[in-house]
Amino acid sequence: IRDSIKIYVISKMKQRSLKQIFAEEDSLPATYNTELASYLKKYDGYRGYKFFGVIMRDTVKFVKNCNKCFYIVNYDKRTQSGSHWVAVMKNGTNVYHMGSYGISPLKEIQDRYPKSKIYYNDRAIQQSDSNICGHLALNFIESIIEGNSTFNEWLQEALRYSNRYRINVLN
Image (cartoon, rainbow, N blue to C red; front, side, top):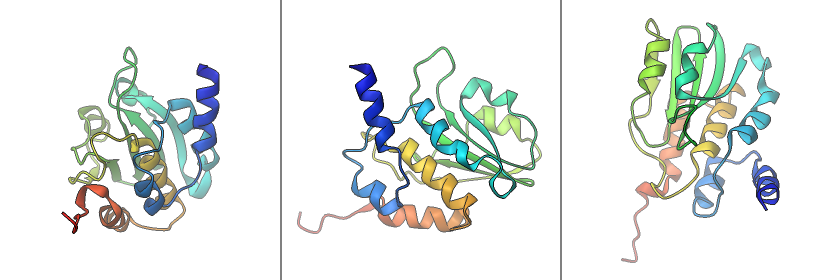
């Protein structure tokens, strides 16, 4: 049964627009480290970016120094099962942290880049009962690497489609 679930999740890992992710927020399955890593490895070396994998928070300290790199971090440690994904991208001295709950970067990420300017979103874009953090992390990384948007442009688009800020005019 576990293998059939995993195959289902892998089949759902595809490029989605922010509009699609938020439209499917109630039905998108949670993402696993192996699916995220498998999907993102195609960007390793693309436009000079190095992919450092999908890692747990207590392994951030092992990320090599880089000029242009990206990775996804889970809030949990290696001894835990995993809880929430955030995306990290570094370009020169700037670090971009996308966390869909709008929380400041993990201490491990801040400690890893003491001389860098870390930009992060401080507004939640994900519903607390949904599983879209991994999907949003993928979309963020793809949008930045492919040059489709800047950090601020991506965030503004995410806020526009986020279900957290929709007003139900019928009630």
